[in-house]
Image: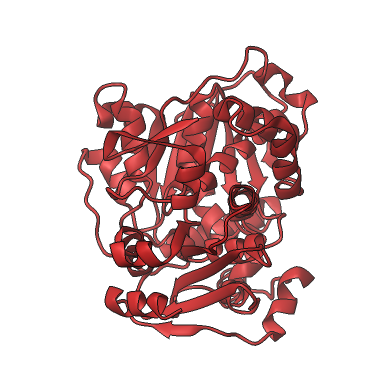
Length: 434
């Protein structure tokens, strides 16, 4: 399998280098030279396959024997050992629950797969690998759980102070061992900028082996494509077009859906559902990409003002002609403020007796708006368990929402985090002193 940089199609690397490096030296993003189509009959055979079996076939097709089948099976069966069930609210509205992994967020799929893949590629290395990851909420907890105790790997998680939920913060600050939390005085965009700058810094590269666990790393995107096939498999009515509504921040999840589409999954439309950080919906409306400082919302994991994966989306659709025209054929953008998000949470609970988190609520609202004009089968990606946002949920629903034991036990643990400014020189000095 060969990959190139979105900033230079002639810069080619193999899968191992792309995964362990994370970010090309030219500040592009790695993309497969070719997104292959799955074998004839694969889609019609989905109902006969387990989620790990689906994942194995997707990877075999993408990797083209780069990793042996025995090793690939081991990687996937270790990483993807939890379900992704569909819950149907009504005959045309379905919730894909992606919170059944250890950190109770969809990013468990990417983090656990990447942890296994990096561990496989890191065998035999005599120099430790240092993972740098920026998080706006759920990525940090998933990466912390996915890489805990991984031999030869250290993880440094940067998160914006005061801008993640209490439970999210506990998930990434209480594990210790090879996991270090850095509490940055700034926004998620500041955290992401620090990570990107580190990868491009020659001094750091000369001293340390660095890799990324954000969705800028191609190893995060590949496993996120698995559950689109899994969702399609579970739909009972195959007579209608299928639409996926995706709560979006850095747009890795949506990009993974486009990967699945390119590999042959029958999807009518992807709904790019955001909060007031509406960079992509605005782009889809106007054709102009205008990054801007992110604004805090109750759907904090989506508070991103310059989504990294726009580069990948633009690259995919550029290959087929007019980037904007092609993208808006497959993607429809929606954005909602906190008030409308709360109303969506209340509506889902009152009408269906289902508790949806503030991110999934945005996806639900986008789907309902789309369905006013289109008779489709809609799947909303529910990206995290609602209890991770308990204060917001309690206030919105007017009662004390229950917390699973898996999360409540975290609140008793001691937070350990190092304070960090948003200055790259400070971050660089910290890393060089390790």
